[in-house]
Image 1 (cartoon, rainbow, N blue to C red):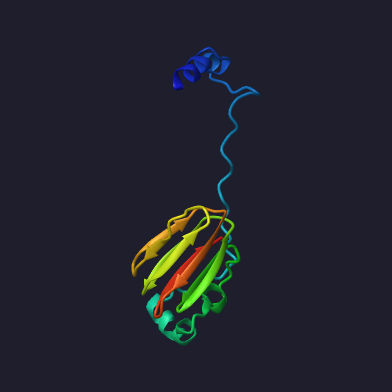
Image 2 (tube, one colour):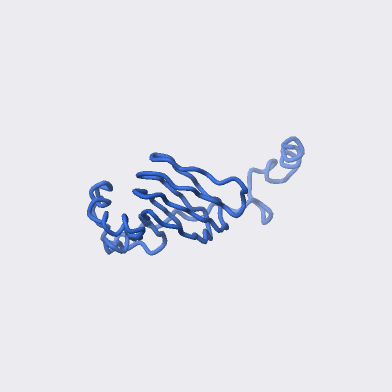
Length: 146
């Protein structure tokens, strides 16, 4: 409850004097510094990018978008996956799935009920988790993970 916290603060020297003490809450961290030396590529048109790689995707392949574009970000993985295929994703952190075309079935080890994803649907898996994805013919999905 908040009442005891407020009562404790009102009884403190911080409240009486308006001055911080050694037991005060630390200040928030410094602002994030922007890395202005990285050259970020121009945005892409996702449907055009999919069409450029449709042969790989239609064979059940995977295309790593950021690596294909020589994008400098090494923190995230942004991939297209096609069907007919089956993948196992070891989600070390939260992972975002978006179904661009067709359908897919996503089975999380944390949930007994599989999710049937149709075109336009998205799903976030809270990591860590291991996920099985079965993609139907013509399926194209986007997976973003850290």
